[in-house]
Image (cartoon, rainbow, N blue to C red):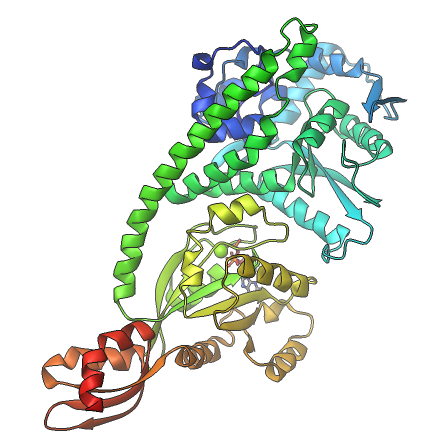
Length: 548
Ligand SMILES: Nc1nc2c(ncn2[C@@H]2O[C@H](COP(=O)(O)OP(=O)(O)OP(=O)(O)O)[C@@H](O)[C@H]2O)c(=O)[nH]1
Ligand SMILES: [Mg+2]
């Protein structure tokens, strides 16, 4: 996994005073420390130094601990023979990896060699590819999980790949209700522990959000330095890696902190146990200190975000003063929104076969063959089980959506779960109060579908649905015409007498509106047209002239 996570381990002492915790002043650092704490720990000191030299490692006060000999550490792990789940000690079920007869030195050399090959370029940085194991649970009678466990796991694997992890295996379990302590049952915990040893797993990722207690109990049960994280932390991590603008970075940092705040609980209690209860209460005090620091950081971040947003709002207001209708592309991640924007406007937005390629909105002008134009905005993609903290943090960015005249819902129709993806998008749109905005459904990637003709015929039968291929340009002329038609529905009808000296208004009406008729008279030009609401307001004085 990315070396940006630095060589992290738990704090070595609860007595580390605040001023010796520089990491706490770095919001993302605090998040990474306790969730998806990527590390360079097990790939030796040389790898560690390399990461730091490259400027991609983040040193912490406890780095010295993290550079302990990995061989000694793995031996320590092997001494653990019991797993305690739900307070019941059970025999460990793991199949031990066969011991080879190589000398410890040779073993270590081999390990270094294989670790070297696990460096890869991720988002322009050289990162260490950690081994991940995926876990999903299907709760009996949960109808809202329409994706199905296999597909949800497949999507989780895609997310893990996007985050730069190497997925080495996965498992799932059907439960009546999740175990409140460990989410999965004790037998499953033992099975995963076995896989951890067999595959050398470094991170176990759960497909659903885990409670702080479940996270901690699972980490304890899996033992060693295995990290446990959930889908939410993984998505937040991807966003953190991909945030390219200041606003996106601040939004993600805020979402990460809000996710982390309740998870600070009990972070220090294990140290009380280690100290035989002699420092009782110490952990609790430390939690309070950390929470206070985190809340202060959240406050600072919110203020910073406010000022960044003020600037963006000014920019948007300037844009809105130009009376062109705004159309927003929305849809499931990887549906092809950015590809469509690029095709129509020649923009150079990143479009790739990865989840969450786009985080920041981009707006470009689309010029249609008939001389008309509209603004098209590309937005962040949605996903099932989208963390609510993330929706909240991105609400301001997504305001672009709620201020649009038309939403174009882009669907990857070649995807086997296209229908479920549509539902997931509709759900987020309703959370954003955008359900009432007129919508056009665009079935994209028809070129990839098994029977394109079938989809085209089906789309023709439906209202407001068209088939396109954003990649090869099929159906894009029709798309622009339908957008024009739909925009007309959102416009208002005006009849205005435009004085000759305001000729520029007349050409704007032709550009952004739908002119039905023009008549020249002594006092000016009488226009009958559909125009965007904002523009109609500008014409108010002239409309009155016409009425009188
Ligand atoms: N075959 C085919 N591939 C397409 C089409 N449209 C997009 N793609 C591919 O789908 C992948 C995702 O495209 P993007 O445009 O990045 O998707 P997006 O909706 O912007 O994704 P996010 O930004 O992650 O939300 C890319 O590899 C595109 O080349 C299409 O019409 N046909
Ligand atoms: Mg995109």
